[in-house]
Length: 76
Image (spheres, helix red, strand yellow):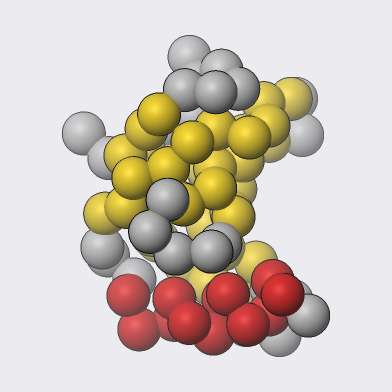
C-alpha cells in the first residue's frame, strides 16, 4: 500500500529531478530512495556504475499507481 500511495504522490511530478540514495544494485535492477519524498523506485536508464550508498540525482520518468511502480533515469 505504501508504494501505491508514493506513486500517487509523485504522479504529477513526472519530469522533476530528485536527490536520492542507492538502496539496491543487482542484476534485476538498481533502486533509489528519494531524500525529500518518502518513496523508492527503480532506475530504468543510466544505472551503470551506481553502487549501494551512492548519492545520486534522478529524474522521475513514469509511475504506475495501480502497481505502485516508480521509474527513474539518472539525471545529468
